[in-house]
Image (cartoon, rainbow, N blue to C red; front, top):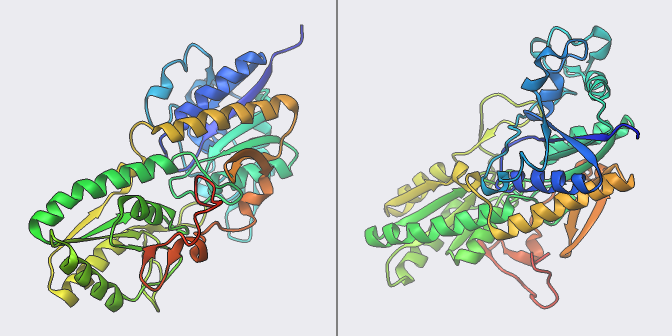
Length: 389
């Protein structure tokens, strides 16, 4: 008998509910094909930290995944493999391990170093013939790079923002919206008791889908999304009128963390990460202060942040995670690589992994949003798929 085929799996970027479900699905399906799955700890960082010439610390960065040791992982959120935001193609010199050979470090125009050759060398030393990365567009952009270098890749999209280009749905989005709706409805009792305007800030850098869909499902008064700059005077007037019309004398606004004032820019802070992103967050607090200043109405500001990505997945995220995991492993078994599993118009499919970096995914404002009134607005429901686009 020949050697058992070995593939790797990793999770990168922020955690979301459903990652462990997808990992378990991959391992269970691999068992049917007699394929061994190696879990890479801490995303792409795990591979960067493996020394091909000295594997004494290999257990710190990899783990063999079996049907037995993944049996119960789907019952919890997060990822048993841990995660990181490392980009091996954009490494500062002082963050490159000493054992990475000079010939495996290529200088970039940014003054950083591309360690892709080291990653390929590590994969070869581990006898890993293909990899399933689970991540957002940043993590999957390096997966695309590996594919360009001739390595076999089948990617699984995940992100609460649901902003990976090429798919209508990413693991984690449904639970994020579910948590947001629950939190908004819980906040109504306090907002109503104190007759305030509630401002709920939700994740969403480039895409305002979490704000839009949470507002649509929770039936909030106004929703500000990343795609449309907003007029604070107009928004304040709307919310005062919404509060006046409400018998309980309160109003609720959702706002994406990537939203910005007309004539302004996105609110960012801190240093850029390995993929060039600075930290978002805080626009809701600024907007709350501005509304209070203009209206005199007291505000409740709630930034849901990590609550949206914590805990176990809902049923829809479980369904998609299981299906994506099974589909990804099937593609590898069949030799169909250089792909990302996806949902389009409610149908499971695969797309070229190059699509991940081909464009940015945004809300279809024309079909789903009223930018004049800052409200969700589905203009024609007939014929829409389950996710509305």
